[in-house]
Every structure is written in C-alpha cells, then in structure tokens.
Image (cartoon, rainbow, N blue to C red; front, side, top):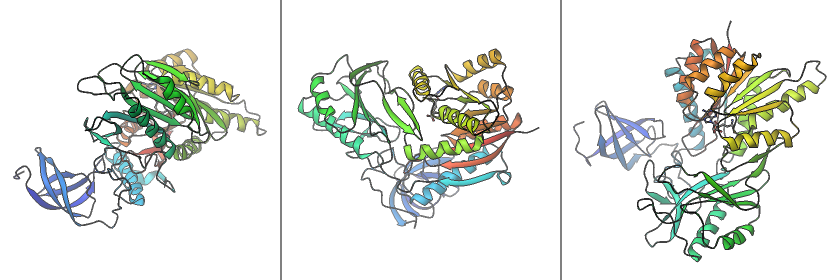
Length: 468
Ligand code: SAH
C-alpha cells in the first residue's frame, strides 16, 4: 500500500477473480487487474487502493499467457459484456468449473470427493449464440444515435456495431432501427437530463422458429413516424412482433409498466425439443438456445423420473422445465407402465410468464401441469398447506440472488427425495446448498453448462438427495 496513485509496477498474475479480472500480488497486497491472465507478467498502473486490496490498470503484457486469445470484438476490453474474450475457450470453461468448485467447497463447505462431477458442457462454436439483446441507445458526439454497452458498472456507453455474441439477425434489426432514427431525427434518450426518446432497443429471436420480436423502450407516450418504422421492420425476414414499451421513470430498470403492440402479437414462439413455447417480452427465456437444451437435459437426467412423480418447478418462467418434465412423465406413463401419470406444479412471480406457461401447456396438449403466480416464498408455503401432497422432486431455478430462506425451509418441509438446483450464480447456489445440507440434503451430482461463452457468468446444475 505504499504506492502512489498512477505509479507503475510489475507483477505476476496468479489467479482470475469472480468477474474474470486478473489477480496478482505485490508485497502481499492483492491487486485486481482487468484483462490480465494467470501466469502473465504485467506492467500495471496503480489506481484505487483499499486496506487489503486495490485495483490497477493493465499497461503492458510483458510475458503473455499461452491461453491468451485475440478478442474478436474490438471493444471487448472496454465493454462490460464479455469479460473473458481474451481467454481461450477451453480455459474459459476450466475457469467456470473452478469457480463452481471453489464456491461449493468454500461457501458450501462440501467435500467434493464424494460428488459425481460430470464433464462441463461447452459450445462447439461459442459465438453469435444469443437470442436476446437489450441495447441502450444514446447520442454519440455528433448527436447520432448509437447502441452499445455500458462500460462495467458505469453509465458510459461504449458503442458496438455488431456484437459478436448476438445472432447476426439481431444485430441487423438494431442497425435498421438506428437507420430509422437517423432518417427521421428521432432523439436518443439522454439520461442525465432525462430527455430524448428512445432508451433501449430490445430484440428477441426464436432460435428454432426464426421469429423476431422488436420492442422499443421509449421515454414518452408515443413515437413519431411509428407507421414508417413498422413498415420498415416488417420487411425483415422473420419479423413477427413489433411493440413499444413506455418507460418514463428515471431508473436502470429497462422495461416500464406499459407495453403497446404495434404490429403482430405481443409474443414470439420458439421450440425446445418437441414443445412449442410462447414468450412475452416481460417473460424470462434463457439466452443461449443451444446450451439451454443441454442444461434442461441435464436437469431431466438428474431428476431421473420414473413416471408417477409429483414435481414442483419453482421459479418456472414460461414453464420450459415444467413442460419438459410433464411430457417426460406422460411419455413414461404411456410406455406400458401401470403407474398413474405424474404431474408438475410450476410457480413464478411474473404474471405474463405464468400466462405464457398456462397457454404453453394448453397449446402443446399437456394436461399434467399446473401453474401458480406469485413469489415462491409466499405461494409455495400456502400451496403446501392446502394440498398436503407427497412431492418427489423439486426443481429450483432462481435468479442470481438465489432462494429465499423461507422457501428453502418450505422445500425441506416438503421432503422431496430429490432436489434439482439450476443456478446462474455459484456463490448463492453454494450458500443455499449449505442450508439444505444442514437439513438433510446431500449434493450428489454437479454439471457446469456454459450458457454465456466469452462472458464471466456461470451456470450449473446440481442434484441433491434426501438422506435418511
Ligand atoms: N426456469 C425458468 C426461469 C428461470 S429464471 C427457465 O429456465 O426459463 C428465474 C425466474 O424466477 C424468472 O422467471 C423470474 O421472473 C422468477 N422469479 C424471480 N423471483 C421470484 C420469486 N421470488 N418467486 C418466484 N419466481 C421468481
């Protein structure tokens, strides 16, 4: 801690931190260096210093790591989106596995020698995989509208022309909209003054159907030349749904409360396996369709269904996992088994997602799935006391903050034989697994599935079984 701000020193990086940043040490003091890789000798400039750790900026790589790859994207290092683009894909996968391991051991207190660790599921082609974009729109220096990403934890927009992890059709839609804004002088949103109009361009694409939905998030009640916009967008192959969302608040939350259809229905469809899903703009849908299928297959194999089970799918979104499981229960029931066909109960907080889930069950002819809307931690305890039914399997797929403590207690009370935990944050997973461990559930299997190639987020699936 004896360095002046902006002083340059040379260090060796020995690890990668939670957000893909390099970690090195100087005189026992820990330094975080964005963009540096383990094994690299680097020249860094001292920035912010705290008592036990500090941040330094990468100035020069003196000895590059053999695992370094040249990012495809010219703004990869500035933009907060892809924190691992400079690391070879195999090492990205190894990093994510290690992250899950470390969390389960350190936070979860697990002895992993007892756990079956299945090989990580990586992508063959880890680019252009995303089916969803929510790009902020701002003015550039010349006043022209641009889209891009906010540099990590800031409100500074880094313009990105064609994002390398998006499906190309999505990038094309975005550039059409920017063209429209330029042609008709539609102002981009200005955050500080809270004026201007277009805040975000939100695009979603069904991977298997090719259906595209565009939603313009607007800081006002209407959009000038909206007919011209819809006419232009309708020319794009696959376009099925165009809508506008009104968000007049000073907030980081992207969507406002009001959604207005401009053309086509207020949803797109996509398929996973032989099930067709309707997806509203407000509903969650996994962003990497190739890996989603693998993640769900993993969850299904961890549940190891016989056919007559009762399954609860908590945090079920539009019912993707619920309906896959319901179909599997049905299929096993029909395979000459004399067991009654099992059923699935899904719970989710977003009303539009639950509407989708119910419609998805109906349109796919799935009759053994029910859905309930509300916070899992309030709805599940109520349902449990009303129904008093045996529950065999609970699927948990919470957002990054993990499961509410009340919900975990309720799940333990339900005493399912198996819990399949799908997690997008290994730290909260490990915290929850620890709670479940203290109440009689043991982790049996773990599999990491890379949903976010080039980025640092880590997805995995864990199987827990009740002991005793
Ligand atoms: N299993 C689904 C969704 C997973 S994402 C899929 O794979 O598509 C997590 C979901 O939890 C989101 O749909 C989110 O809206 C929902 N959610 C967030 N907090 C919740 C809560 N307290 N209770 C129930 N659902 C919640």
